[in-house]
Amino acid sequence: MSIIRLARISDAADLAKLAEATFRDTFAQKNTPENMNSHCLSSYGNEIQGQEIVSSKYVTFVAEIGSKLVAYAQLRWSDSPSCVSANSPGEIHRLYVDKNFHGKGLAHNLMNECLKVFEERNTDIAWLGVWEENPRAIAFYKKFNFEEAGEHVFSLGSDPQRDIILVRPVKNFE
Image (tube, rainbow, N blue to C red; front, top):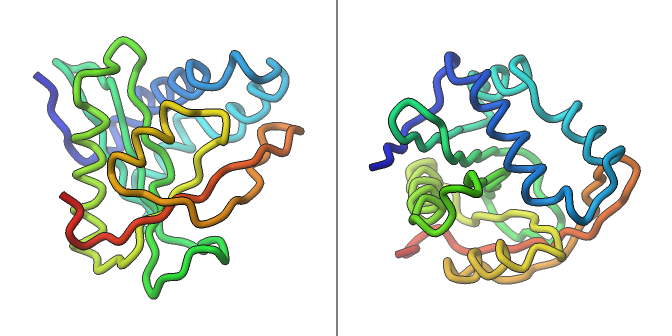
């Protein structure tokens, strides 16, 4: 049985490990070790995740089974790409599940939590960037009625990659 809750500062070290591991599991096969290492060094670590957990610009959920973190999602409110037409956009910055727990409904439950927070904060459009070479994630987001709105460049180390920008209204998400 999993529990989804808001991340606490005491989760920073475990979250950093989970975040890096799930990122590598998802993308390492199609990218160079140098670019993966560069990205992971700048994006994951106890201090980095700790700062994100306490920042008012982020909301971070974790899913745990027993005392082990097995999935997480992170929302943020910042500038959005020009293709996102909204008064108050919110980004699903990250949503990852440990590969050993795929297919158990954790991503679905995390997405519902994300959309609830967006609604509570009067976010009108939820948006996210997803790598064009990640069909599993694209299919998942389409189940939640996300639609393509544009694209942007995601730099993975020295490799500029195309991310598809997906959007959906926040109201009536179920």
